[in-house]
Length: 453
Image 1 (spheres, rainbow, N blue to C red):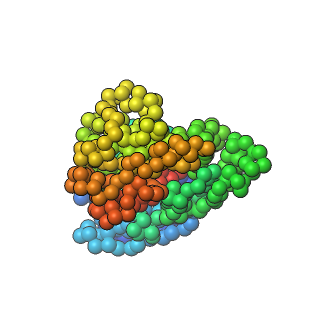
Image 2 (cartoon, rainbow, N blue to C red; image 1 turned 135 degrees about the vertical axis):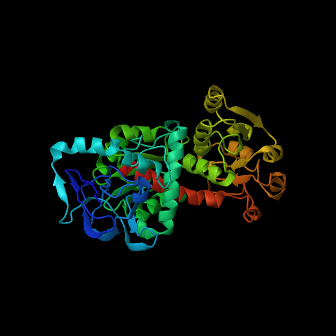
Image 3 (cartoon, rainbow, N blue to C red; image 1 turned 90 degrees about the horizontal axis):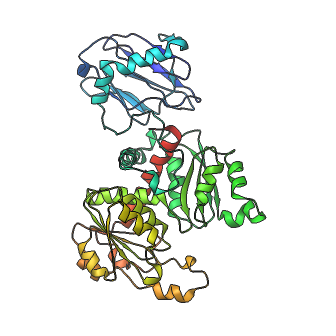
């Protein structure tokens, strides 16, 4: 058996018999992922000779393992394990990557690297790897992520969404088996939150730590950062990027995330910008709908509550417009109705929408009822308008009785009194499962932005 290992400077190969086990060390804190994710099985190739594979993943510390050449599985996270042909495991699973340097390996000169790679990726063997992947993906493992920053929901298309959801499913496995989650070891994430947050900030920080990374955090940055001294957002971003590899930011002004991304040389993730957008919330919302309902086409969704100020519903509407035969119902008090820009966007995309004042009727028709709170902080001194909107639409047992059996209630949280607590025990109350899905989506985004597919 021959295995090719691609490093930043050379390809190394070695020849072994079809059932020889070898031991090696994996090193290379400076190496970046170029290719992983193939399922390898010598029998499926019908050959007993040279079996080229490529393994390269950033890894900041040495690890060792042993493997059999009969069967080698490499997952998209850069972890790999080996087993005998009968499926019994040998050795240990490893947080992988980097270059492999056993004494038997023969380095190939850098000058012929491209020819080696072209030959490798055009071979019939490579086609077999692709056809035997454990979980097919719309995007090739090891390639750079399609986005440099996550700023708004309009950046995504259906194909990218599906691929992100595949990665999120893998993240769920890592969360249940932390030993496999060290792919971001050596990376630092900075969280800059100029507005209060519980779920978003903690889920991002948990996501980074579960993947082996570290966190620099500033909570209530509006008051306890140099912004209080008059520092511009651009200067803050340029300073913080010198300490970190990625920045997650929540800001009180719409458009601030795009402003930060323009100034930054590292990835920026918008964790909510005032009444503007909350793209990662929308990603986890669509992911939740897919998991709960089983489809994203041909669904009816009711958006309820503060639709004028709710950045979550705005971003969700943008993503729902990517799918077919979707109908959206807007249920909101007059003072916080959905703004015309979203309605115009949906119309332009061919999405059917309707405004309604009857929550009970909408609940009886929808697959998803997405409730939101009336946001007191968006009304300023207009307490009269807040009081006019607050308490208008509440999901209680009566609404649940009208809800279809397969349908679900979602909420971005925090909740005040717009969903009564006696609804929590109903299995159709999906909002806490929804919040947990945020961990997997954010783990996926961190992996993709820092390492690629």
